[in-house]
Length: 268
Image 1 (spheres, rainbow, N blue to C red):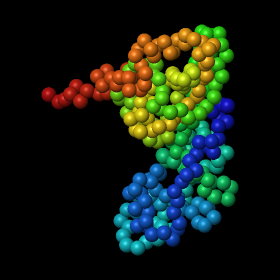
Image 2 (image 1 turned 90 degrees about the vertical axis):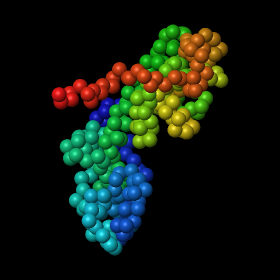
Image 3 (image 1 turned 90 degrees about the horizontal axis):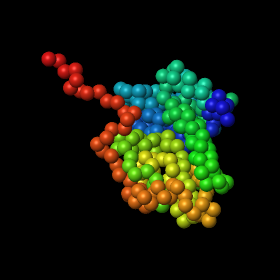
Image 4 (image 1 turned 60 degrees about the vertical axis):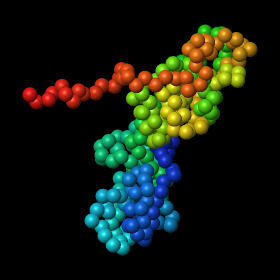
């Protein structure tokens, strides 16, 4: 599917916290302090019609007992579920918003679409091409058919095929996991073992965060058909049995990361 054909409803978040117009602003403050995902709350009536939005900026210098409808922003930029992700991303960019409410023709709130969701849609588009190239390599190398499926895999049972990861990139993958931006892993189901092909930084970040399961594209190769799988031999020669065997390189910065030298331009 082309990027222009992917619609907002495929990536919008539907688990959105809302608030009613008669709620007290003190309730909103408590909920924002607890960590609302969108730095504010959509205001809806009993039928989920979007009436407005109340965020931190609306609560500046608001004291005492005040109802939400007295301070909420009423004129909102919204998108429909059928709009393409590409067009929604353009609206976000041009308006300077970080997220937009998604509503139906009757202005009922269906979800929220954020710049993070736009990024996630782009990331997930690249995964099928990686899967296909891996499948083609395995089939060409071992002259077998390799079926592909999707399912959750147990992080602690993954056998890595990469000896080390970068510490700074590991931090970036942790952020992606926390914000739902991480793309699926690519693994090979090889008998009793699950070999990790793509996603070592993501998997190690998940293990450190206590995440037990991750979504993955699974390529299945039978040991009966391929007794000497190259990926398995790579793990064996590297002494890699679990993610605990993967080294985190704290000393070599990732080659794509560039940082300024704070001492390079000091005034004389």
